[in-house]
Length: 377
Image 1 (cartoon, rainbow, N blue to C red):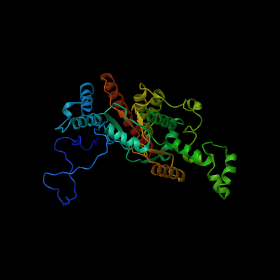
Image 2 (cartoon, helix red, strand yellow):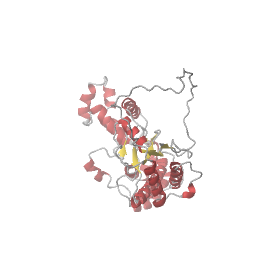
Image 3 (cartoon, one colour):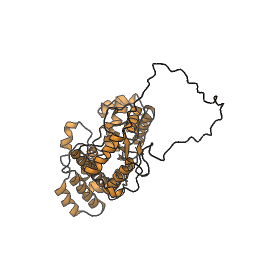
Image 4 (tube, helix red, strand yellow):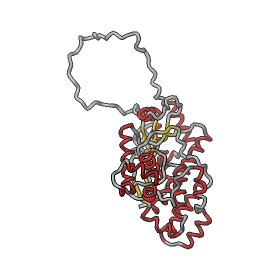
């Protein structure tokens, strides 16, 4: 069972009035003798009975009833439902829509409702896990049907001129928001790919890299263009992005601008830089009192081809190369459009907590999208 937010008329396949009919014409065959039917012999090893595990309408209906009773779903959002599943999807997507006050300009993702059978099939396709023993009959999946790529460098000069730490503060806040919601493919990802594909993940100094690259490329000019110091400026400038060891990350971001500093800076600025400060403060305030772990609470993860969006410092030979490699790998080894799947809770307190976290995640994503629209092109 797969629910689509764009089609509220869908329900269970076995609901009244829904029947499958072949589009092929019936074939005329020789009939058997009147009142006589010959049955083939059946081996005793063939099971006489079968249990269809995934069809649990009673459990599904009970879960839906609990979410209407204990969650924020509203009965008046439901119009002429054809089944319990149809009623739930109408109410759920109406609630989801109320959590954001505008369309997304940069991020691409869709909420999708799936039953356990659909999740089993998706996970088996990519060998990413198995939920067949999970008692949850209903899951929320986040679908990312495509990935759009945006540049950061065109507007970075204005932000750097406003304050040397402003662009770094922007990227730190984007990273923190992504960790709590949906992953973004950022410049640090592209830099990591460079390390892997050219140096097997062990980044050398420029002098060491020259010896290695000389075996791979012909002329000295080409070797120089692939040196770490050269590529770093094209993929992830060191004054903005942290690409070292995790133990040093805290010191790198220590000078990032927070609320009071951003307020004082904003009061001195005009135009886009001022709006960026406002968007930063809004996003930081949304994350101030929420846990650092993901608010989406994915229980099962899938190898997804696309991310909610890609951020590159600039479009160049390396970004195109690494994205092509990634999608070729997805095509060869299998991938889905779903980052993960979240079972709907059944306990009253857990249901309320689940919706509270989802609502916070949606607001963070909306605020993140506003910030991305200001800093990327």
